[in-house]
Amino acid sequence: METTEEWIRNVSGIEERRYAAEEETVAALAVSAGQDCLQRCGVAPGQVRLLLVASGSAERRFPGPAASVAAALGLGETPALDVPLASAGSLFALALGAQLCDAYGTVLVVAAEKMSSAVQLDATNRGTAMLFGDGAGAALLSAAGGIARVVSSVLHSDGAYAEDLRLEFGKPLEMNGRSVILQASRKVPRAIEELLSAAGRAPAEIACFLMHQANQHLIVRIAEALAVPPERFFSNIHLYGNTSSASLLIAAREWSDAHGFRHGEPVVFAAFGAGFHWGALLAEGC
Amino acid sequence: MNPQAQISEIVKQVAKKPLPPDPEESLFDSGVLDSFALPDLVSRLEKEFGISIPDADLAPRKFESLARIEAYLESRR
Image 1: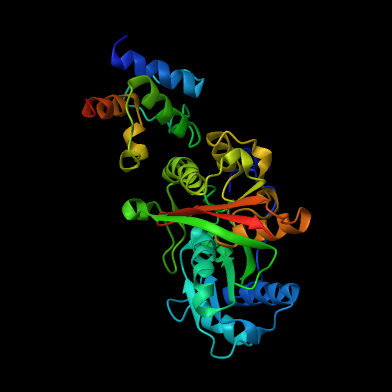
Image 2: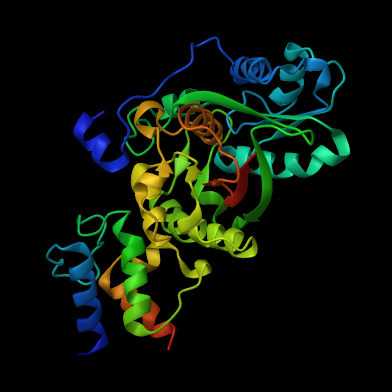
């Protein structure tokens, strides 16, 4: 591909990204993240009552990875649901999972992506090949408490631009970057303002914004639209590239390890992706 | 200032680059605008022309060239 490291860094902020091994599946990545999450939370697989697996890069039409992930995690006959939304999938799963806790009990949310399989089909397309990486993340939702509580969320979808970001089986990823950036740079700040306004909060009060890691310039632009210093937006895109739905949960884990949810401190999660689907979620440290 | 001149001035200020001589030429392909300048351009057009551009109108092709921007703004009158 005709490009340079400098160009990639300038247009995206990406310096490194990870690719899974050729034989590793989306489900295998999800299982690793799910096991790690359960161990860190000290929760046995038998205590999980619902599994939500977000992925836009699963290998087959059906069944999606959720059932295989549930089996590998030892969840028995626990219901396992796929959320094939791509980049906004983990946000939607977190928001809906939090509401399903009352009905089901403990909900495990996992997001896993093997974007390398998609972009390698068009490996010389510098508009996509250098952007995406592989990864997985997980979060456990429980009505019984934890390190943070989900206060509220807003979710939106608009299929008018469904063709502008899409991945079909056996075909390379198609992205109209201008459309994605134009829509995301307006819709995400608006969703965050909608979320915070309903909660009686202002952007300046938020301790940290955890965004889907799509592009560093987009993250900065959203910070500017909210009149918040960009440093308030956690970023690790330089290390992993865009890992689609996994990026939000990887960011949450890394921010939580480095900083930690503190009692009463508000944190906003936000994502935007194919569909378009987008939204924001307000959490508060316990 | 007529709308055509006003649009050119706005694009020039957002892009910080000289404009293509042909108003039909793509502002993207000619390197005048990049993806991240487009949201700035739309915001400036909204401010300077006193309009609100709905998300449904935010197809990049509507802002592809000076002529297309002019045609879009004309359609909003």
